[in-house]
Amino acid sequence: MTATDSQALDRELSLMEARMLEHAAVKELAAFGKLLASKPLDARELKTFFATMGAFFKTVPTGILALALKISDDWMARGDRYGATAMGAYILFADVDEFGLHDLRNGMQRTHHQLFQELTAHLKVSEADMQDPRYLLPVGQILGERTTEYYRHRSIGEALGFHLASEVTSSEEFVYFLNGFLKYKEHYGVKDDADPVLHFFRVHTVVEPMHKSMGRSMIEIYAAQDPAILKQVEAGAMAFCEGFADLFRALNEALSASAPEARRNVG
Ligand SMILES: [Fe+2]
Ligand SMILES: [Fe+2]
Image 1 (spheres, rainbow, N blue to C red):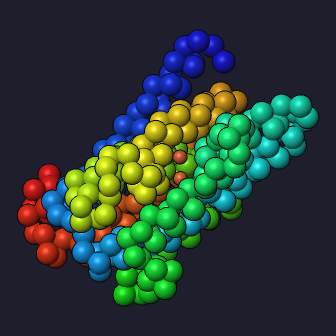
Image 2 (image 1 turned 90 degrees about the vertical axis):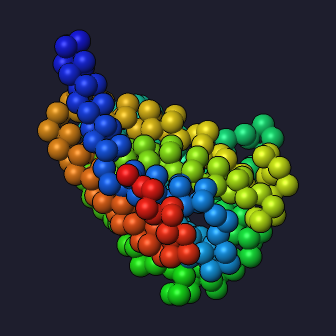
C-alpha cells in the first residue's frame, strides 16, 4: 500500500465517521441529552431508561470478545501463526475495562456490568423492573439482539463497522448521561461530581475515544489488504446507527410526555 493509498483510506474512513455523526442516531441522542438536562427522571422514567439500555448493554462485552476471537482466528487461518493474537488485540483492547482488567496492579476491578448494577440498585431499579415489559421498550432488546448478531455472526467487515459506530456514538452518549445525572444530583442521591455511584457513566466518557481509534486501526489493516471490505464496514456501521436511532427515538417519546419543551427545542 502506497502513502497515497493510505491517505485515501484515511480520508474515506473519516468521511464514514462523519456520516455516522450526521445520522439521525446522533440527533436522537442529542435530543435525549437535552431531555436529561431538562428535568430529573421520575421512578417510571428511570426504570424505562435503564431497562431499555440494559437490554442493549447486556450484549456488548461478549460481542466484542467474540469479534476479537474471530479476528485472531482469521489471521491464524491466513498463516500468521505469531501475529494473529496481536491482531485480535486491537478489538480485545475495548474489552479490557468491560471485564475489569484495566488496573491489575490493584487487582481485578469491577466490570462495566457490575458498575451498571451498582447504579441501577442505587436508583432503585430492580432486576424485575429491568425485565418488565412496562419499562423495557422492545427497541432495547432489538438493538441487543442486533449487537449479538453483528459481532458474532456477520462478516468481520460488518462487525468492525458495527463496532466502530458503537464506539463513535458512545463517546458522546455517556457525556450526556453523566451531565444529566450530575445536574440533578440531589434528586438522584448523588453526593458530588466524583460520586462513585456514577462511575458507570464516568468511565465511558474516558475510554471510548481510544477504543474507537483502535477499532479504526483494525479496519485500516483489513482495508489495506482488501479495500472492498469498506462496503461491509459501512453496512455494519449503518445497521448500528439505525438501531441506535430507533432506541433513542423510542426513549425520547416514552420519557418526554411530561417534558414537551425538551422535545420541541431539538433541531
Ligand atoms: Fe462499557
Ligand atoms: Fe468502548
